[in-house]
Length: 95
Image 1: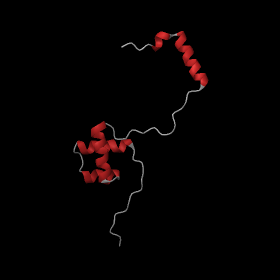
Image 2: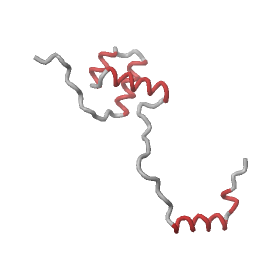
Image 3: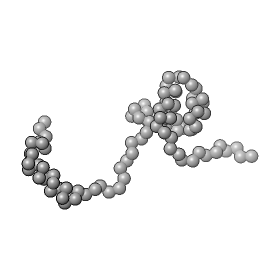
Image 4: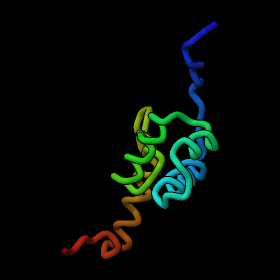
């Protein structure tokens, strides 16, 4: 008999489910145990989502950009320069 709890694999939890869980908790509609039984994620995950919600107003972490920055093509640069020559007032930043 194994006494260790089963480990949940890494899986994506929808944004809507996270928001619903936070709302149920903050409005004291269900107990935390009932919420966790319904949504199926751990207590630790719930409190991580709750902390993110309270600090950022969102339940999903912003994605970080990965990969190389794109270098503009030669034709794109010339097109932008032509736009600036024809309409210089479009690009003025007066503060």
